[in-house]
Image (cartoon, rainbow, N blue to C red; front, side):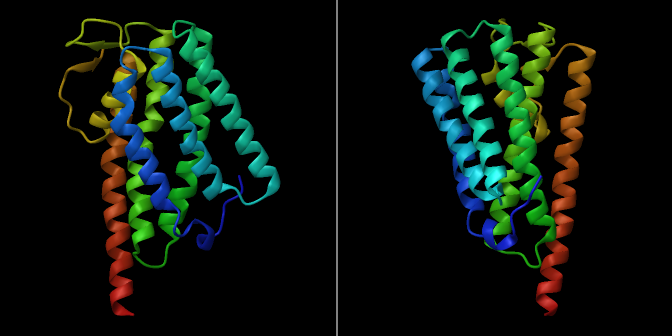
Length: 221
């Protein structure tokens, strides 16, 4: 997959972070599965696709491919919003989200770990990747729950776990807060939760080491 140069990504990571924070703040509006609210949220999520395309595409072919992914996802997401019980629509939406998150995380990670100094852009990119890692596991959890209902249990609602709860659960798991309200009930779910906890801890540790080393080099210069 082609990667854009540092000069192109520079100054744009903050837009990714801003959209991600917005999506994390407003997803509760979809709690009632109201089609209008779901479609609104999906349109805003499409904004994350647009921003991702802007910072990751370095050729006409890659731009075309990225836009195609975004369009297919938006169509699938709208169809899901109109019929949230259709398993195939749910799985397709999750799969496209997974592909997109892999793409944008890989680009931002490369930018962070090839930077020559600690800048505001590097910090913004690092924060964006942290949130994107939590988003990355949401479709994975969703696909598992759709394929094997009951893989996760919400002790507070006593109802099947929906994707909105996975947005919350994934960030809580990544940060190792672990409130215990949403729990992995199957062995597969527990395995995935364990992987996410490990990813969260390792990312913070490796990121801190990277930023400290960059700052030390920058200070010596």
